[in-house]
Amino acid sequence: MNSVASPATPPALALPLSGRHLLEAAAGTGKTHAIKTLFARLILEKNLPVEAILTVTYTEAAARELKDRIRNSLESLLAVLETG
Image (tube, rainbow, N blue to C red; front, side, top):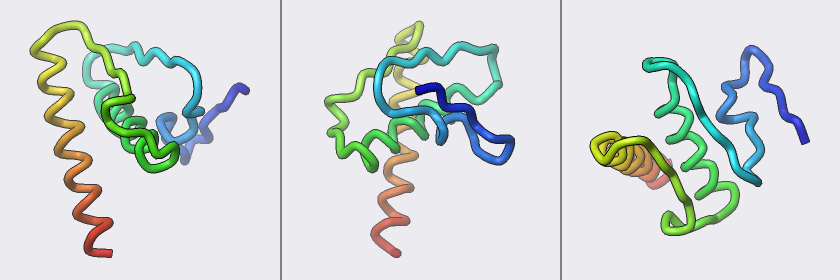
């Protein structure tokens, strides 16, 4: 299935949640935001536990930063869901 995002739909919301996907782009183009969105979608839409999701980046420092950003994003999402 080839899913294409409309101009109003961010690509991370249009991407199918099955199979493998590679996000490759220059600095500052929204890769981290896309990864955070996909991570949250996998948890909410596919009911996957965090431990079942593999996210890979190039350096240990980048991996730590990505982990922190995903954690903060999930904490914010949980707060919104808990408060209605």
